[in-house]
Length: 296
Image (cartoon, rainbow, N blue to C red; front, side, top):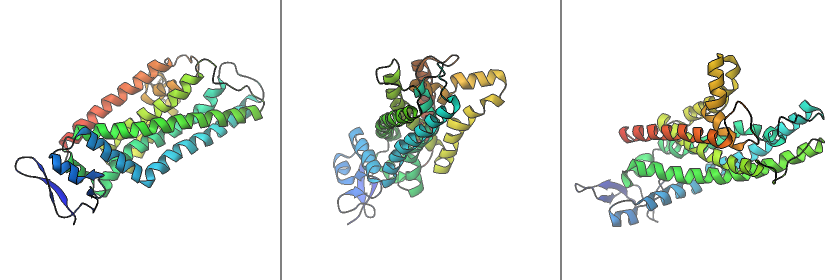
């Protein structure tokens, strides 16, 4: 027998015909309807369990996480190779070799943002968001659970990506006879950890964008514009705007956490990351406001 969720005149969750499978899980929503109905409300742990169930059972989640790692490895090899061709054996002391290898993160971060965006755009596209909101009407709780689940996945994927890029880039640089880096060099361990942190916050940024636009294509367009196009075109802007974009724009500031050494006029690593977190927090607050006021 199948069922749908609803609420009676006292605000308690009730179940009718239509949407639940034999195991009590609401199809496509990750909700254990029987346990929610028994209590009459969804706890935060229920929402977290639901979001984790939805994330891990979708093949596209794992494909996206794998794409983050593989794209990182590919761009690490490409940019390390480009460093070898550009320097032609002449060492540029001003550029740490790991910074060359990590330049591909500017593209990889778009995939991490997409991971967060799809947490909501997929539900809107498949029509399962109303079911989730019926089981857990407190929308802030749903947003918080999505943020925890997808940021955690992006964090781990970012750390795996950082290690992969570290090893691939080191091998390519060594093959070209250029200086390589080690884990013990100042700033290298922080940069490796910073890749995971940056990807986690980028997934939250994507989550906020996904809530605001409710479209996967629209979210990817915004992510590409913010992460790639606006910074890449900074040389075309007036001097004051170019200086702002290079130093204080959210993705350029956030990327400093994955860089080694001071790079004037850029912000220090943790200051830049704090700026990125502040942008993301404001956007998440705006997304939550819209999410609460807009129909599913």
